[in-house]
Amino acid sequence: MNEAQGRLRVGEPVAIIDIGSNSVRLVAYEGLTRSPTPIFNEKALCGLGRGVLSTGLLPQDGMDKAYEALRRFRVLCSVMQIKNIQVIATAAARDAKNGPQFLEECSNIIGCKVDLISGKREAELSALGVAMGIYKADGLVADLGGGSLELIGVKGQKLGQGTTLPIGVLSLQDRSGGNLKKAQKIIRKELDHLPQLKAAKGKAIYAVGGTWRSLARLHMKQRGYPLHVMHNYVIPVRDAEDFTSLIERVATDTIDSIEAVSAARRPLVGYGALVLEELIRKCKPAEIVISAQGVREGLLFERLDEKILEQDPLLTAANDLNILRSRSPRHCQEIIEWTDAFMASTHITETIEEKRLRHAACLLADIGWRAHPDYRGEQSLNIIANASFIGVDHPGRVFIALAVAYRHMGISDDEVSPRLRELASSRMIDRARILGAAMRVAYLITAAMPGVLPRTPLLCVKDDLVLRVPEDLAALSGERVFNRLRALARVIGRSPVLVVGDA
Image (cartoon, rainbow, N blue to C red):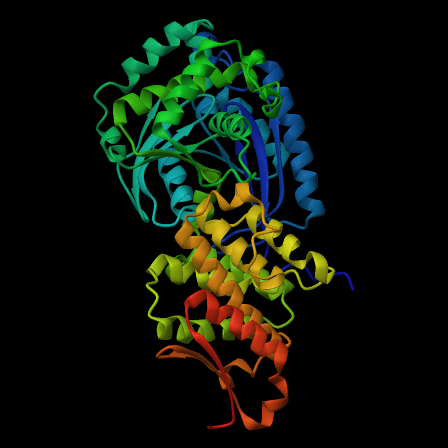
């Protein structure tokens, strides 16, 4: 069989090639969906924007590296059988005198037209990428590239007025002659009196771009952060201020964990820190949120129809994994309805967001079944904690991972990382235990097969937790089921009752 069974039937794959001021990147996606999954991702650091402001020209060595990368990307797309390829170029090619000739050669190499996008359009695409990947985003999108900084407000899927400034990290290095003090003055002057900055006051700055991801990676390493997922990583403002000050103050190579940043990016992180520091000073945001999605995902977003855009990105991604990895995807859907009724009967307060996360956990409850029974909980937790989900913050991700881990391991915390638990509130951990304990009952009476849960309701009736099993399925009940029912009842403060038949 030639067709991979680990792929979804979501139409033809799509590739985006982004010819940026610092890097040239190819990202191939499984298809056009609300939660697009990359099947291949590669970049080449070409430094096309280096020296453009002082010389007016793209450097020859940078262009040669870009040509080499594009030749490789064309063959890779052919190998992956991708015909739908979109290629864009940004600030460096916009600003250079030899930009048109460079783009003509790029088009010849890659075999399709390169779209040179304006700064304003780049800002809008970045914001759409953030809207695609961050659930109900509300704040200022700041996309820092090699040649420019794009700023634009975002609220949900609504965008503000975008602007572009010539203070990308390579541009700053060029304009300041490598002097951080001079670079700081340039940044302050460029950011003065910008109306776009108001969008971040008391809200979030969504940081897009490789230099800021490098800063965030350093921050994670220094904190000993238990997750390695960059998307939706949050840096509190006070922490960001202290950290950017450290980056500016000391030599880059002396910073602890600097090996987490590629050698090519290390000389540029100081400029990224300066820009972030000045944005914080001007905007007074509530937090800095790292977005791994930007212009490329914005291009995908534009191509989705309204019906798909209405879908929840987290639940879409969870259902995709449900389809690919569960013994019965329909059974996981039944757990959603089964736990809906159970939670409503408990009268335990559940917010809309908590319900959404519970539904995602139900969809992911069986993704580890192929592992050895002793490791299913650990494997499921690791997959969920580190998966490339979008539309969920890190505490929400931890809730889902814990709920599924408890479903396999039992509701003790003995085998769960205490550092991971620190990312979730005590309320969320309590909800994860309740859901994990309920799923332990569900899987024991169903063997992960559909059709049983609709006939075996689990409901709270006054002070009792009642599981009803119809007469023809009476043999499914027993001591093991009752023990799990009792464990759940203990967590919610009820007495367990197992009823067989209509009595």
